Image (cartoon, rainbow, N blue to C red; front, top):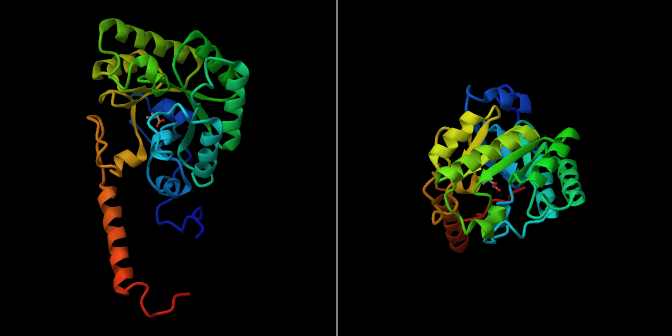
Length: 277
Ligand code: KIV
């Protein structure tokens, strides 16, 4: 089967989502984003009205079955970016800079970013806001490589943060978050992901910036929302943190399809007597 051929559609093709559209959306209309790691889902996302697609290092959980994003490598992200980029034309395509590529060596950082852009990314997402990270972001942006920031719960710093916990709870912490967000805007980020922050933090950071915030578990006031595609489709009913909504129950649907297939094969009703070409 050829996956990346879209059949003729009734609706006119959507316009390519570019950085200027995302920046202009702030305060005007909510930005919608999902993660995606493969061509099959990318084909479905391409036909939806989603604005932004992230090849996230969450693939460490979703695709690789691990329990953190730390083992995910540049090769892994580049491989999945290639798969998604082969099909995705309209939404803006962001790739995660994986663990260890940012805030340490410039050579490692710039090499990783170049590889992800060459794989088809249109921007990269970077966790954190240390001086070194901001310097590296500035350099990437100067070289024409757009950067999306990521604050709040930054899963690559899981061990330092003491686990997956809500961020921005205390006054000090909240002020720090706003301060870091402004540093990222100054460094040249075009948008900022805010993960697992209090709703108050989501609001304060969003109000403090001229660039859009894209929240995950950070309240209703962010300029947009992002969810892991497999999570919002309900492909794992056991995973339902408070902020997550299952917009579908694919776990059940896939389960029934597989059951039906097994019983038809066992009963001899599939493939049936007709020869298929
Ligand atoms: O890797 C990822 O999927 C992410 C989102 C949760 C924002 O960083």
